[in-house]
Amino acid sequence: MAVYVIGDVQGCYDPLQKLLEKIQFDPADDYVWFVGDLVNRGPHSLKTLRFIKGLGDRALTVLGNHDLHLLAVYYAGFDSKLYDTLDDVLSAPDCDVLCHWLRHRPLFYHDSSLDLAVVHAGMYPFWDLQQAKGYAREVEAVLQSENHVEFFKHMYGNAPGCWSETLQGWERLRFITNCFTRMRLCNMQGELDLTHKGPPPKQADFQPWFSIPDRLDTQIIFGHWAALECQAPRDGVFAIDSGCVWGNALTAIRLDDMTRISIPCVV
Image (tube, rainbow, N blue to C red; front, side, top):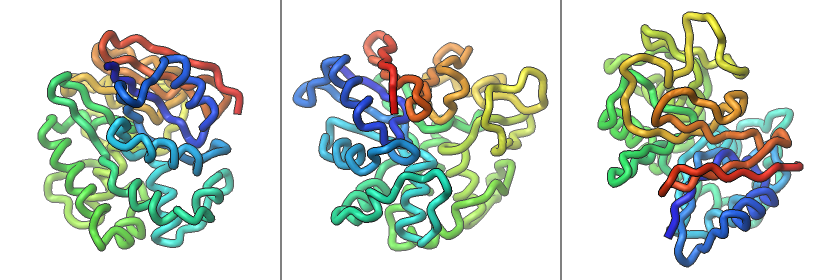
């Protein structure tokens, strides 16, 4: 038995199949975990969702920002963005089944036997493990409730920019969601910069979340930040978004020895 973690697929179904073939994934014996962003920007979001859902308990995925965007378009009626490629999902006869399944995925997953966490964007460096689990469950409870449409109506936005235990309501849930699905940079005061999209700045007040001193030392595998080129220069932190949707590569990590396996992507 082997367990693999795979980076942002974003609708790149054919490269995913080639990567699974390369690692000799056996759904009868192996497990595959995904760091979110199963859909969007790539050409085959529908096939990707159907395939991963069809793996049943052999697959685990956390939610990414593009997955949440699909849900916001479907449930709350938001317009698609210019470069979205979600029409195949939204027009599919099983769209409701797929979106119901997707919104019941976790934001954050921690395997206690490995002391390893899987998350899309990162883990807020001023939370401990129990806080991260608890805050993720707060959002998951609303996503999986009858109030999920209201959640999506209030999900977008960069404020509040800093955590406080006194945050309440939609602001609290928005900050938690942004940390797990959008965060890249943070400063020593705990403020997020949610506008940065390129490589880490060389000299700035804001730095990658995993560079904050005294960060939780749990091993973390995350995606979301293709500009890192899978380089997260901290022990126990593994960046795995290798930019498949941009024509670069799709990457898996085998957890028994933390070996990386990649295949080139042509989308």
